[in-house]
Length: 344
Ligand code: GLO
Ligand code: MG
Image (cartoon, rainbow, N blue to C red; front, side):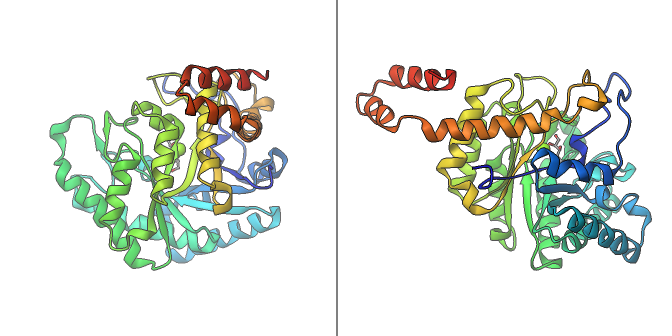
Protein backbone atom coordinates (compact mmCIF):
# COMPACT_ATOMS: atom_id res chain seq x y z
CA UNK A 1 0.00 0.00 0.00
CA UNK A 2 2.82 2.41 0.85
CA UNK A 3 4.10 1.63 -2.65
CA UNK A 4 0.94 3.05 -4.20
CA UNK A 5 1.39 6.40 -2.56
CA UNK A 6 4.54 8.46 -2.99
CA UNK A 7 5.47 10.90 -0.27
CA UNK A 8 7.37 14.17 -0.36
CA UNK A 9 8.41 17.05 1.87
CA UNK A 10 10.57 20.14 1.62
CA UNK A 11 13.88 20.86 3.36
CA UNK A 12 12.07 23.58 5.36
CA UNK A 13 10.12 20.83 7.13
CA UNK A 14 13.25 19.96 9.10
CA UNK A 15 13.89 23.25 10.80
CA UNK A 16 15.54 25.02 13.68
CA UNK A 17 12.38 25.93 15.58
CA UNK A 18 12.45 29.73 15.46
CA UNK A 19 9.06 31.43 15.79
CA UNK A 20 8.02 35.12 15.83
CA UNK A 21 8.65 35.20 19.60
CA UNK A 22 11.90 33.35 19.97
CA UNK A 23 15.10 32.31 18.25
CA UNK A 24 16.17 28.95 16.92
CA UNK A 25 16.39 26.06 19.39
CA UNK A 26 17.98 23.40 17.19
CA UNK A 27 21.14 23.49 15.08
CA UNK A 28 20.89 23.96 11.31
CA UNK A 29 21.19 20.84 9.26
CA UNK A 30 22.87 21.04 5.86
CA UNK A 31 20.94 20.29 2.70
CA UNK A 32 23.09 17.23 1.92
CA UNK A 33 22.36 15.74 5.37
CA UNK A 34 18.66 16.43 5.00
CA UNK A 35 18.62 14.57 1.69
CA UNK A 36 19.88 11.49 3.54
CA UNK A 37 16.80 11.58 5.79
CA UNK A 38 14.31 11.17 2.95
CA UNK A 39 14.60 7.46 2.24
CA UNK A 40 15.13 6.65 5.93
CA UNK A 41 11.81 8.30 6.73
CA UNK A 42 9.98 6.64 3.82
CA UNK A 43 9.96 9.58 1.38
CA UNK A 44 10.93 9.69 -2.32
CA UNK A 45 10.11 13.24 -3.38
CA UNK A 46 11.85 16.51 -2.56
CA UNK A 47 9.97 19.79 -2.70
CA UNK A 48 12.13 22.80 -3.41
CA UNK A 49 12.08 26.52 -3.07
CA UNK A 50 14.18 27.98 -5.87
CA UNK A 51 16.79 29.09 -3.34
CA UNK A 52 16.79 25.74 -1.52
CA UNK A 53 18.26 24.47 -4.79
CA UNK A 54 20.32 27.56 -5.62
CA UNK A 55 21.15 29.64 -2.51
CA UNK A 56 21.66 33.40 -3.09
CA UNK A 57 19.85 33.04 -6.37
CA UNK A 58 19.46 36.78 -7.00
CA UNK A 59 23.23 37.22 -6.79
CA UNK A 60 23.95 34.53 -9.38
CA UNK A 61 24.11 34.71 -13.18
CA UNK A 62 22.04 32.24 -15.20
CA UNK A 63 25.19 30.25 -15.90
CA UNK A 64 26.11 30.03 -12.19
CA UNK A 65 22.51 29.14 -11.34
CA UNK A 66 22.45 26.33 -13.88
CA UNK A 67 25.73 24.94 -12.59
CA UNK A 68 24.51 24.79 -8.97
CA UNK A 69 21.15 23.30 -10.00
CA UNK A 70 23.01 20.65 -12.02
CA UNK A 71 24.99 19.68 -8.92
CA UNK A 72 21.78 19.39 -6.90
CA UNK A 73 20.30 17.12 -9.58
CA UNK A 74 23.33 14.86 -9.22
CA UNK A 75 22.83 14.77 -5.44
CA UNK A 76 19.19 13.76 -5.94
CA UNK A 77 20.18 11.02 -8.39
CA UNK A 78 22.79 9.79 -5.94
CA UNK A 79 20.13 9.39 -3.23
CA UNK A 80 17.53 7.90 -5.60
CA UNK A 81 15.23 10.89 -5.02
CA UNK A 82 13.13 12.97 -7.39
CA UNK A 83 12.26 16.66 -7.33
CA UNK A 84 8.51 17.13 -7.09
CA UNK A 85 8.28 20.88 -7.68
CA UNK A 86 10.12 24.17 -7.35
CA UNK A 87 8.52 27.24 -5.74
CA UNK A 88 9.87 30.80 -6.12
CA UNK A 89 10.57 32.11 -2.60
CA UNK A 90 9.80 35.76 -3.26
CA UNK A 91 8.78 36.46 0.32
CA UNK A 92 12.28 36.51 1.84
CA UNK A 93 13.70 39.12 -0.55
CA UNK A 94 13.67 42.86 0.21
CA UNK A 95 12.09 43.23 -3.23
CA UNK A 96 9.18 41.05 -2.14
CA UNK A 97 8.35 42.93 1.09
CA UNK A 98 5.01 44.13 -0.26
CA UNK A 99 4.55 41.14 -2.55
CA UNK A 100 6.43 40.58 -5.79
CA UNK A 101 3.84 40.02 -8.53
CA UNK A 102 1.40 42.46 -6.92
CA UNK A 103 3.88 45.03 -5.63
CA UNK A 104 2.97 48.65 -6.27
CA UNK A 105 6.50 49.15 -7.62
CA UNK A 106 6.77 48.08 -11.29
CA UNK A 107 10.50 47.28 -10.80
CA UNK A 108 9.60 44.71 -8.14
CA UNK A 109 6.90 43.20 -10.35
CA UNK A 110 9.44 42.83 -13.12
CA UNK A 111 11.91 41.17 -10.73
CA UNK A 112 9.22 38.71 -9.53
CA UNK A 113 8.35 37.61 -13.08
CA UNK A 114 12.02 37.25 -13.94
CA UNK A 115 12.54 35.15 -10.84
CA UNK A 116 9.55 32.98 -11.76
CA UNK A 117 11.13 32.31 -15.16
CA UNK A 118 14.41 31.40 -13.49
CA UNK A 119 12.51 29.06 -11.17
CA UNK A 120 11.21 27.32 -14.30
CA UNK A 121 14.80 27.00 -15.55
CA UNK A 122 15.81 25.37 -12.24
CA UNK A 123 12.77 23.05 -12.40
CA UNK A 124 13.88 21.85 -15.84
CA UNK A 125 17.34 21.03 -14.59
CA UNK A 126 15.94 19.19 -11.56
CA UNK A 127 13.41 17.46 -13.82
CA UNK A 128 10.46 18.77 -11.80
CA UNK A 129 7.24 18.93 -13.75
CA UNK A 130 5.68 21.94 -12.09
CA UNK A 131 6.16 25.12 -10.11
CA UNK A 132 4.23 25.93 -6.95
CA UNK A 133 2.96 29.43 -6.32
CA UNK A 134 2.38 29.97 -2.64
CA UNK A 135 1.47 33.64 -2.91
CA UNK A 136 2.83 34.54 0.53
CA UNK A 137 2.95 38.33 0.44
CA UNK A 138 0.65 38.80 -2.55
CA UNK A 139 -2.02 40.52 -0.52
CA UNK A 140 -2.39 43.45 1.83
CA UNK A 141 -2.11 44.49 5.46
CA UNK A 142 -4.66 47.18 4.74
CA UNK A 143 -7.00 47.11 1.74
CA UNK A 144 -6.34 50.72 0.74
CA UNK A 145 -2.68 49.99 -0.01
CA UNK A 146 -3.35 48.19 -3.31
CA UNK A 147 -5.83 48.04 -6.13
CA UNK A 148 -7.03 44.44 -5.72
CA UNK A 149 -8.49 44.35 -9.24
CA UNK A 150 -5.14 45.23 -10.75
CA UNK A 151 -3.43 42.80 -8.36
CA UNK A 152 -5.39 39.82 -9.69
CA UNK A 153 -4.56 40.90 -13.25
CA UNK A 154 -0.87 41.13 -12.33
CA UNK A 155 -1.01 37.56 -10.98
CA UNK A 156 -2.56 36.32 -14.21
CA UNK A 157 0.02 38.20 -16.24
CA UNK A 158 2.89 36.60 -14.26
CA UNK A 159 1.41 33.13 -14.79
CA UNK A 160 0.91 33.78 -18.50
CA UNK A 161 4.44 35.05 -18.92
CA UNK A 162 6.01 31.91 -17.49
CA UNK A 163 3.64 29.66 -19.48
CA UNK A 164 4.78 31.46 -22.65
CA UNK A 165 8.43 31.40 -21.59
CA UNK A 166 8.46 27.64 -20.98
CA UNK A 167 5.97 25.67 -23.07
CA UNK A 168 6.34 22.56 -20.89
CA UNK A 169 6.15 23.87 -17.36
CA UNK A 170 3.00 23.57 -15.24
CA UNK A 171 1.97 25.71 -12.28
CA UNK A 172 0.13 24.63 -9.14
CA UNK A 173 -1.28 27.47 -7.07
CA UNK A 174 -1.23 26.85 -3.28
CA UNK A 175 -4.08 28.93 -1.85
CA UNK A 176 -3.93 30.43 1.63
CA UNK A 177 -6.22 33.12 3.02
CA UNK A 178 -3.83 34.96 5.36
CA UNK A 179 -0.45 34.90 7.11
CA UNK A 180 1.94 36.54 6.69
CA UNK A 181 -0.52 39.10 5.26
CA UNK A 182 -3.82 40.12 6.82
CA UNK A 183 -5.48 39.22 3.53
CA UNK A 184 -3.92 37.15 0.77
CA UNK A 185 -5.15 37.06 -2.80
CA UNK A 186 -6.29 33.62 -4.05
CA UNK A 187 -7.45 32.32 -0.66
CA UNK A 188 -9.16 29.12 -1.84
CA UNK A 189 -8.87 26.48 -4.55
CA UNK A 190 -11.99 27.98 -6.15
CA UNK A 191 -10.09 31.21 -6.71
CA UNK A 192 -7.09 29.27 -8.02
CA UNK A 193 -9.15 27.27 -10.52
CA UNK A 194 -10.93 30.42 -11.69
CA UNK A 195 -7.58 32.12 -12.28
CA UNK A 196 -6.32 28.99 -14.07
CA UNK A 197 -9.28 29.09 -16.43
CA UNK A 198 -8.25 32.56 -17.60
CA UNK A 199 -4.62 31.63 -18.33
CA UNK A 200 -3.22 31.36 -21.86
CA UNK A 201 -2.97 27.60 -21.41
CA UNK A 202 -5.47 26.63 -18.68
CA UNK A 203 -4.57 22.95 -18.70
CA UNK A 204 -1.09 23.81 -17.38
CA UNK A 205 -2.40 25.59 -14.27
CA UNK A 206 -3.76 23.65 -11.31
CA UNK A 207 -3.59 23.58 -7.54
CA UNK A 208 -1.93 22.28 -4.40
CA UNK A 209 -4.18 22.12 -1.35
CA UNK A 210 -2.84 22.42 2.17
CA UNK A 211 -5.00 21.16 5.03
CA UNK A 212 -4.18 24.04 7.40
CA UNK A 213 -4.78 26.69 4.74
CA UNK A 214 -8.28 25.37 4.00
CA UNK A 215 -9.10 25.32 7.71
CA UNK A 216 -7.81 28.90 8.08
CA UNK A 217 -10.23 29.85 5.28
CA UNK A 218 -13.06 28.27 7.31
CA UNK A 219 -13.42 25.45 4.78
CA UNK A 220 -13.29 21.69 4.93
CA UNK A 221 -9.99 20.45 3.45
CA UNK A 222 -11.55 17.25 2.09
CA UNK A 223 -14.21 19.22 0.21
CA UNK A 224 -11.56 21.57 -1.17
CA UNK A 225 -9.64 18.51 -2.39
CA UNK A 226 -12.82 16.99 -3.82
CA UNK A 227 -13.52 20.19 -5.76
CA UNK A 228 -10.01 20.17 -7.23
CA UNK A 229 -10.22 16.45 -8.05
CA UNK A 230 -13.54 16.96 -9.81
CA UNK A 231 -11.84 19.57 -12.02
CA UNK A 232 -8.71 17.46 -12.63
CA UNK A 233 -6.72 20.13 -10.79
CA UNK A 234 -5.33 18.42 -7.68
CA UNK A 235 -1.67 18.24 -8.52
CA UNK A 236 -0.30 17.95 -4.99
CA UNK A 237 -1.36 18.23 -1.38
CA UNK A 238 0.25 19.63 1.72
CA UNK A 239 -1.24 17.46 4.41
CA UNK A 240 -0.87 18.64 7.99
CA UNK A 241 -3.26 19.70 10.74
CA UNK A 242 -4.52 22.84 12.35
CA UNK A 243 -6.23 23.29 15.71
CA UNK A 244 -8.80 25.96 14.85
CA UNK A 245 -8.32 29.55 13.79
CA UNK A 246 -4.89 30.59 14.99
CA UNK A 247 -1.43 30.87 13.45
CA UNK A 248 -0.56 28.36 10.71
CA UNK A 249 0.46 25.44 12.91
CA UNK A 250 1.58 22.81 10.38
CA UNK A 251 0.87 20.08 12.93
CA UNK A 252 1.36 16.38 12.26
CA UNK A 253 -1.31 15.07 9.88
CA UNK A 254 -4.33 13.89 11.84
CA UNK A 255 -3.03 15.17 15.17
CA UNK A 256 -5.78 17.74 15.77
CA UNK A 257 -8.71 16.26 13.87
CA UNK A 258 -8.43 12.57 13.07
CA UNK A 259 -11.89 12.41 11.49
CA UNK A 260 -10.99 15.34 9.24
CA UNK A 261 -7.78 13.57 8.25
CA UNK A 262 -9.75 10.37 7.54
CA UNK A 263 -12.02 12.32 5.22
CA UNK A 264 -9.08 13.83 3.34
CA UNK A 265 -7.65 10.35 2.79
CA UNK A 266 -11.12 9.10 1.79
CA UNK A 267 -11.38 11.78 -0.88
CA UNK A 268 -7.92 10.97 -2.24
CA UNK A 269 -8.97 7.32 -2.42
CA UNK A 270 -12.31 8.17 -4.07
CA UNK A 271 -10.49 10.37 -6.58
CA UNK A 272 -7.97 7.67 -7.51
CA UNK A 273 -5.11 9.92 -6.45
CA UNK A 274 -2.39 7.23 -6.24
CA UNK A 275 -2.96 6.28 -9.91
CA UNK A 276 -2.16 9.86 -10.95
CA UNK A 277 1.43 9.29 -9.79
CA UNK A 278 1.27 12.59 -7.91
CA UNK A 279 2.93 12.94 -4.52
CA UNK A 280 1.38 13.19 -1.09
CA UNK A 281 3.29 16.12 0.36
CA UNK A 282 3.51 16.60 4.12
CA UNK A 283 4.01 20.25 5.02
CA UNK A 284 4.49 19.61 8.73
CA UNK A 285 6.72 21.27 11.32
CA UNK A 286 8.20 19.78 14.47
CA UNK A 287 7.05 21.46 17.68
CA UNK A 288 9.54 23.97 19.05
CA UNK A 289 9.86 21.83 22.18
CA UNK A 290 11.24 18.90 20.20
CA UNK A 291 14.93 18.11 20.85
CA UNK A 292 17.18 18.17 17.76
CA UNK A 293 17.72 14.41 17.62
CA UNK A 294 13.95 13.83 17.63
CA UNK A 295 12.97 16.56 15.19
CA UNK A 296 12.01 14.37 12.21
CA UNK A 297 9.32 12.32 13.97
CA UNK A 298 6.57 14.67 12.75
CA UNK A 299 7.36 13.53 9.19
CA UNK A 300 7.47 9.78 9.74
CA UNK A 301 4.46 9.97 12.08
CA UNK A 302 2.42 11.91 9.51
CA UNK A 303 3.22 9.30 6.88
CA UNK A 304 2.34 6.45 9.24
CA UNK A 305 -0.96 8.08 10.20
CA UNK A 306 -1.76 8.65 6.52
CA UNK A 307 -1.17 4.98 5.68
CA UNK A 308 -3.18 3.78 8.68
CA UNK A 309 -6.05 5.96 7.51
CA UNK A 310 -5.81 4.52 3.98
CA UNK A 311 -6.31 1.14 5.62
CA UNK A 312 -9.28 2.51 7.59
CA UNK A 313 -10.89 3.91 4.45
CA UNK A 314 -10.44 0.65 2.56
CA UNK A 315 -11.80 -1.52 5.35
CA UNK A 316 -14.85 0.58 6.17
CA UNK A 317 -17.82 -1.79 5.73
CA UNK A 318 -19.41 -0.69 2.45
CA UNK A 319 -22.60 -2.66 3.09
CA UNK A 320 -23.17 -0.78 6.34
CA UNK A 321 -22.60 2.50 4.53
CA UNK A 322 -25.09 1.56 1.77
CA UNK A 323 -27.69 0.43 4.27
CA UNK A 324 -27.38 3.61 6.34
CA UNK A 325 -27.66 5.74 3.21
CA UNK A 326 -30.65 3.75 1.96
CA UNK A 327 -32.37 4.24 5.34
CA UNK A 328 -31.24 7.87 5.47
CA UNK A 329 -29.94 6.91 8.89
CA UNK A 330 -26.95 9.20 9.05
CA UNK A 331 -26.79 8.89 12.84
CA UNK A 332 -26.01 5.20 12.34
CA UNK A 333 -23.51 6.05 9.62
CA UNK A 334 -21.78 8.52 11.92
CA UNK A 335 -21.60 5.93 14.69
CA UNK A 336 -20.23 3.33 12.27
CA UNK A 337 -17.47 5.75 11.17
CA UNK A 338 -16.54 6.58 14.77
CA UNK A 339 -16.57 2.92 15.78
CA UNK A 340 -14.39 2.06 12.81
CA UNK A 341 -11.90 4.81 13.70
CA UNK A 342 -11.87 3.65 17.31
CA UNK A 343 -10.98 0.18 16.07
CA UNK A 344 -14.03 -1.78 17.08
C1 GLO B 1 3.22 28.29 4.16
C2 GLO B 1 3.24 27.38 3.03
C3 GLO B 1 4.65 27.02 2.59
C4 GLO B 1 4.64 26.53 1.17
C5 GLO B 1 6.02 26.34 0.63
C6 GLO B 1 6.00 25.89 -0.82
O1 GLO B 1 2.23 28.56 4.76
O2 GLO B 1 2.50 26.24 3.31
O3 GLO B 1 5.20 26.06 3.44
O4 GLO B 1 3.93 25.35 1.07
O5 GLO B 1 6.71 27.53 0.73
O6 GLO B 1 5.66 26.93 -1.66
MG1 MG C 1 2.29 24.48 2.21
